[in-house]
Amino acid sequence: MTHDILIQSPANPNRLVLLFHGYGADAQDLAPIGDMIAQAHAEAAVVSVQATTGCEAGFGWQWMPVQGATDANRATRLQQAMPAFAASVKAWQAHFGVSDTHTALLGFSQGAMMSLAYSQVDGAAPAKVFALSGRFISPPTRVNSGCSIHLFHGEDDEVVAPQGSRDAAIALQNLGAVLGKDLSLDMFSGLGHGIDQRVLRRVFGLL
Image (tube, rainbow, N blue to C red; front, side, top):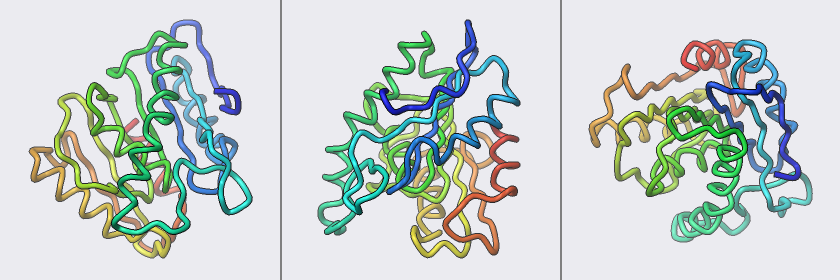
């Protein structure tokens, strides 16, 4: 929690929104989005969370290493990174006295991958997961009642293939998620690996 950015801290928050940056970035990266969320939701606690491991690329931070990653070892790397990620979620929930049922996770890129994976952790069921330009590293195995998952991806993303979000939506529907109820998928033409005003408008409409 040392490097996390506490954006808004109401006395009695009605919800907690945690933001998780991408590979090679830091908590400041998503802080502007956190500011907009805070302005729109005065009773929400809002925190931009920073990964605990310095990035192997020599700048920023990472949730898990990318160099040397393969289909064979990527899931293991995520499993090794999950305890620190989950600890951050639990620490801020404890700090504000907010449960999973009033917690929303918003992640971009690697932060989205971690947020999606967290929805599959035993005992974890955040109310909402917003995954921007991400995907499941391992196929999901369940749909948690009360946890809605919202997928956003640019059609021109050359960093994380947009098919990853489509595959996530299909996998979740096969597990019983209902599109338009506890699952949404939004693809954006002309958008690469990033977040634009169209994405933000859709996120805010669902938050």
